[in-house]
Image (spheres, rainbow, N blue to C red):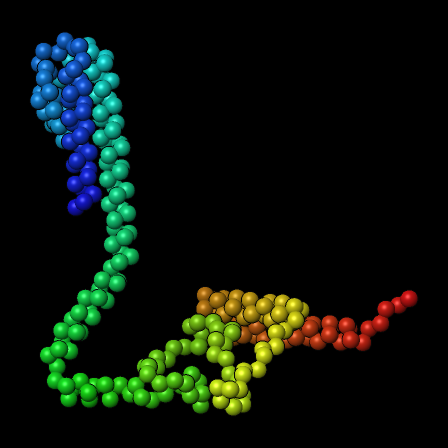
Length: 243
């Protein structure tokens, strides 16, 4: 609504500006004399109701024809395209906020329903969720409590680095965590190359659906890279320069 209002405001400004400018010219058009007459004529041009026969009268006045040409260009090319661009941008903004507004409205509905629910029923619902139970990251790997566990296929998201850091030993606050050993540049580059190969193979597996062919190619590529790394390490450890 705001964009349409700005468009109408700009249209009124152009109608007033061009009607006063054309009426101030020294022309010989007796039928088009005065600001109200030109405002009505320009408005008819905008909505497409201006008689075509009246355009022939403007051929005798090239200055008036030039003003009308500039007015038509500003209205039908500049203002309309500007209105379309503003509506498009407002649609993108509304679409970005649509999901957040829907969630806020859903939360308001939930809060209004919770106010009318009995306390015993709400307490039973909370106990049924099992927030006091610890969630398992993997089988036997017990994590923290206070959440709901949702399972997904392992191939849905490719995770090559575990974000959970595990350290053995005492959990006393006075005992510092051991220093993490960083791999050297050669091993890091080799693992990065292997990681890219795994992600690429998984994407091709999802795209083509050839599971057996992809897994065999992945296995052969990993074995080949491992063999090459072992050969390079043995060559660097056992080789001697020839003098």
